[in-house]
Amino acid sequence: MSSIHENQEENPIHDLTGTEAVKKLRSLIDKSGSCFFVTQANLNGSHKSRPMAVQKTDDAGNVWFLSAKDSVKNMELEQNKNVTLYFQGSSYSDFLELNGHAEVSYDKERIKELWDPTIKTWFTEGVDDPRISVIKFIPKSGYYWDNKHGNAIAGFKILLSMISGKTMDDSVEGDLTL
Image 1: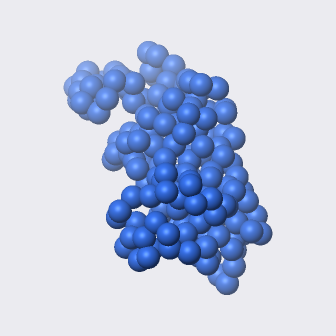
Image 2: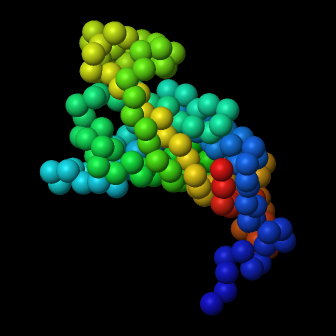
């Protein structure tokens, strides 16, 4: 069986570690702003996957969320802290999968730091709403799919490939090790 990468002039696999991995994940998360937050425990037949808005990604690559203390997600995290996050920044690039674990806290200072007025939709008492918890996701590994030169160049290369019959894929992908 042949590989999809077999006819490419450049190797599209580029694994990243340490600060390079953190830089890549921060850039992809910034493009998306939200993700699917997938827990491993399953309570009451819950879906285990839900959309979540990212409040912050710090310099270490940790991803921060605000959540309701009494949510099924928080109850699932009490049983199993392992989490997978899925991000999509655009239709054709900026894809990211992160694997790690989550820690739940009730740190009022962190809540104030992460607070955004739009969150009042869910926490009607505002930043001091007693139902708010903080989720810190600590990534250990991941995988990304992106393009090297932006969507315009990638699209142009696809057009040239169609005309010329040569593979001119602009994609790049690889493991992220944090």
